[in-house]
Image (cartoon, rainbow, N blue to C red):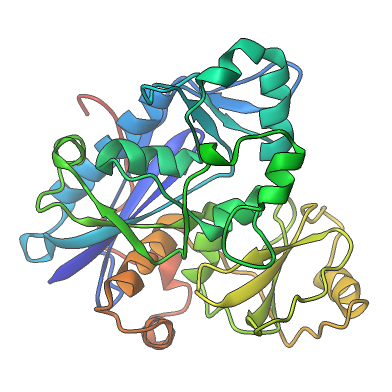
Length: 353
């Protein structure tokens, strides 16, 4: 049986899950990310890159060991993770720790870091998101996905690429930033070093992936048009516009940003501020109605992001055929099963465990 793997990164943990073609989950694992700290005065969470890579590799090693023999034919894996960045030098070595700003603040945080480290700017060759650092180290591929660029506020409204006008206005070199792909697009295969570090044989594919928040949504329920995702206090509400229309730029309400969906050719509106404790779905509906949008359904369930990342690999393979097929299978599963399905309970994996 062919399996698809999802790997999600968070400041304290890397979590992996395997997904079968029937959306069964034969194994899940997790590994602690050590050494995380908050930078004084900025609120930015920082992670040593070596720990990020170690945890991701170890979670995948453990996952493969947990998989039943019949499920060990791996097509590929999808990646998800938080918004953030890391700068690499001309030898592709880190110039800083991974930096995870508290909000969609990649541009501001990068400019602030450069102002404090002006002598490092000429040494920068590449700026990658946290999950894309793992891709680069495991496959050698330089790539990112459209949702990560949207989360940074830097996707061009005219085409799926970096907003070069914004980068140039911020005096940032456009050459630092990787090519942009749809979330389910295959970008590369694991190289020999990647296979050694992850324990995954056969040089499986890596698809572009997504931000964690959006990956968790695609794994929970169909991201249909005119649906509002309102998972609760502390989360960013998301509204699904639906299919992208040629030569049409949707209206963006105040306090929102326009985002690509992990599902190709669909668009989302993401609220910049998370919902507070007293915020109700009706409050968000009113905001959207003021800009001409109608809410036809509300979704509160969120699944683990690694399941969404695995779904991106499944659709990217072509073996699942389409998102329509994925959601047909998802609807046949027991209610809320994306959160609880699977024979293996997640466990905290670490060296020597």
